[in-house]
Length: 351
Image (cartoon, rainbow, N blue to C red; front, side, top):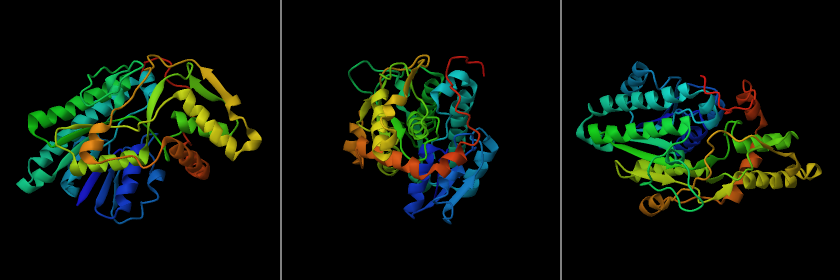
């Protein structure tokens, strides 16, 4: 049998693909447009497997996507492909509307046309998992957590486009009967994350003695989830989740951004004591427009109903993440060759 992973050359998608291939159970077709944040470098560890397949196809390409369904006949779809960087969505929202909304519609439509032609057993076995973010719920005050029943209140073009895609996924289940599930996750971190996100920026800048930029006062709070634990959770949802249900996936690790940056500085101090303290490199910069103050996720549903649990603590995960980047600078160089590291998200909103 075959599963599809859209966005499989991205950060979370590649972690899922590497895990699926290493389990040696079924074929995996990666569907990825290979935009700036998607790289086949992240799939090299499993690309020699006969069960690994790749198609450079835009999820907005209806004919191309339908052809892949006809050829590979998947038993499940992990739909991760999305534009995902908040700062980029502020400067260029059109790409986010196109990929996250039109692309998700295209995937749902193709999946439905394929699913409706399956026999009864095939229909019962098929699953479409739409992977989303906790940012669709807006921001929290100092207390409380997001749950599966929290009202939607997105605040950025990115989160608004993801909120819309969540609603489309649920509509295709409710209206057409497509066996859809939805997950909403907290901030992922770990190996193979594109160097525009906070933790890779801090690790790599600290390594090179460059400023460590922190938005505002660094007091924004996020819940941090190790990417490989997220990949495990997604597989458990496909295997055992109830059709039509939503599952929150979080790390139970709330930290302010400045605390995360200082934690990385302490790890770098241990690895490069001659350059300590790395905290001297921290520079507070102008905050992004509409920066949500706090996210936190209640993941008790997936823990209680599906038995998922994390494999490591945030402290252990950060140590592993820093070590991975320091040991894989060739990967960083390969995926960053066209990345200028310019500041984004200052609010032009023109594209």
